[in-house]
Length: 119
Picture 1 (tube, rainbow, N blue to C red):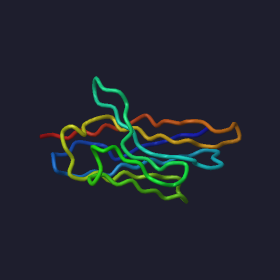
Picture 2: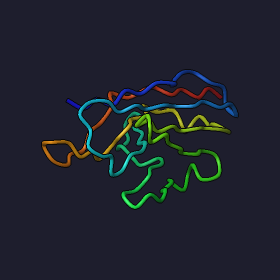
Picture 3: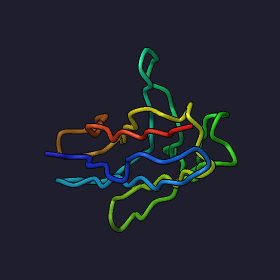
Picture 4: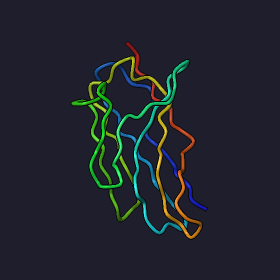
């Protein structure tokens, strides 16, 4: 069984910072891609930032220059450093990973962590 566990969400004032963490655990052969998505009320889930299969990074235009994704491969963990937060960043943030196990490659999602940015 593979699990993604997020942490680090919370309430912050506009202009503040938060750091999200996501740790993958279980019988993992390799992690092909890993990153963060978010979903605000009434909106579709959208990509925030992610490491691609090739190791490059993708960022949503709305977070470029403010958010930074990083990872610790030894810990199967990805981080999202969020700075200069805006009220429109308020959403549930989900960790996603494309993971290879003995069962093959599959997409996995965490349960989400709520980030609330007050104005």
